[in-house]
Image 1 (tube, rainbow, N blue to C red):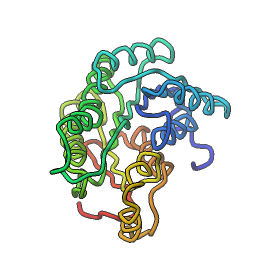
Image 2: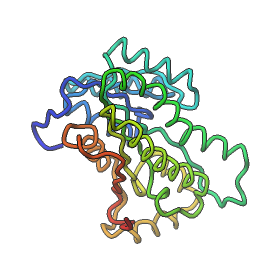
Image 3: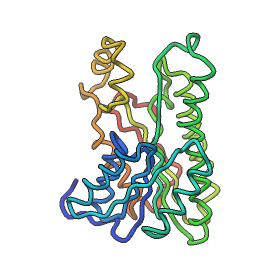
Image 4: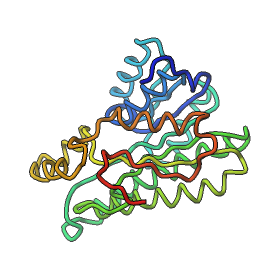
Length: 256
């Protein structure tokens, strides 16, 4: 993080899937920039550990249980955060899950899980947060999509479809909510070093090496690489940016 940045002082941020990986890096960055951060995750113990780690360096964070596949859980989490930290200024939709396999070998059960977490989770959390943002006349929503949603990705057909849907959904929300001064933007990671990616690739290590060779910067992304982009969209520096999609993938995809 650039030293001394306090762009988010006084803001409250809810980050989904924030217990580990990209979500943890995003939550940490937002806290470092002054936000009070809700570590929203279904893994309560890991979320508590992350919140404790953020507080240990002098920043404010609380863990809150959230199952993004449940609208009731999203509503309850939002109510808890607003009670404990205050009105939510920033929503980061980060929670995600995938299973790498050819579409013809996948099952409806897998489709349902991928859609419930990656797409319906975004719908649930946005619907839970937006009315309060509208009432206050402002807010920032940043959703984590994927370059798979921009250009497709072999072995990730349903996941890619969900991530593409997030982009279209976010652009539509940006149009609908501009009059309320609510900015809606999207960050698209490429392959990133996380426990999820390691789990997906354990069965196919050659795919991982091929990914690295295809990235002009010749390395996988790191969670911290995404955090700065999210912090920008969450800050006043992005007040005139809405409906935008930013790829953070080491140059893996460069199409507009």
